[in-house]
Amino acid sequence: MKPRNFFGARVTEARENIFVYHDPIHLPRTTWRGIGPLVDRWRDKMLLEAMGRLSLESPILWLVRPDTWDVPGKLHEKIVIYQMVDDYLSYAGLTDRARARIQEEERILASRADILL
Image 1 (cartoon, rainbow, N blue to C red):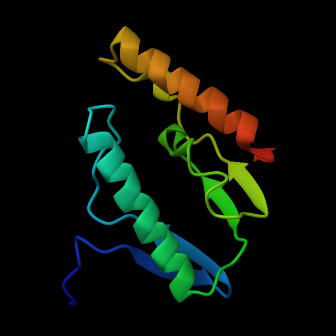
Image 2 (cartoon, helix red, strand yellow):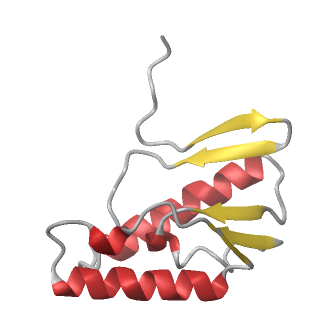
């Protein structure tokens, strides 16, 4: 078995010309000063590098998590699809602040999406 590079993004080809981007080691999105912007810049850099390796210029962007609300517009995408795969607001243990943040992220991402599923 080939060891996984935990600090580099992976891209797999699900079918011909359909690529799935896998984030490097998961670092949660956070609003903590210093850490949040650092994680965001790292994530954006890895994603743009993966697109460069594939020579993608204007991809179809398919997002499934509300915390990716800030990705649309950064990749010169043709279309943005937001697939709502879970009811994140119903997760147990959410604080009112976390619930409000998720609700706002979902609202923003839905407004930026061309297609909602």
